Image 1 (cartoon, rainbow, N blue to C red):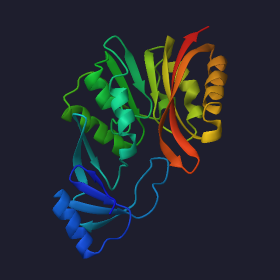
Image 2 (cartoon, rainbow, N blue to C red):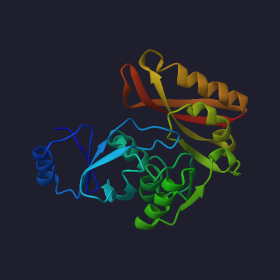
Image 3 (cartoon, rainbow, N blue to C red):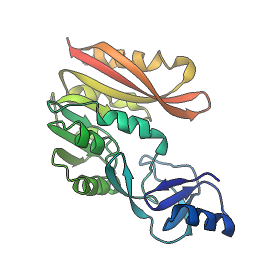
Length: 247
């Protein structure tokens, strides 16, 4: 029986009978079991759930020494991205200013701020519910190097401030690259996420990065492609660690 435990809430993807529910309760000591009834939809990636056991859907999940408060009926949690969240925790350093363009509840922001200890992280999120939990998680983890911003990142007036820009979003992410270059200093990194067919995995993301870097008067000087997880048959969620320099 497949399930995902987030804090003390268990998420399942199929209806369960009474015996199966009791088995999960005994194994996990969970307070709530919810069923994802449909695929996660909409701009804010909102889950649709049915409560099979318990009542409370808000929980605190601990991962890699970080605390994440969230409501699983309102906010998506992806277990498949854990390796990338851990990798990003150590990608920066104390001399950098970082912008997380799609911060959510702090998936990348919180571990990066805690372990890399950059000077400052601007965490931008336009979903008011996710922003609420982002602020809660900053407090929970006792971090003082994060500035949360409730906004569409395209409306944020920051220019030439970031040594590193995180673009942890996979739906038409390239349409936000102009803004990423606006945030970037004369030299810096963009962590660009995309879902891409396996056969063009090593071509299309780089072509897009080169196109937008040229458009914004930057040059792509170095890059590495990291495979995060299978997104669909023949399609991968990847991230490009790309270094740029102003021409």
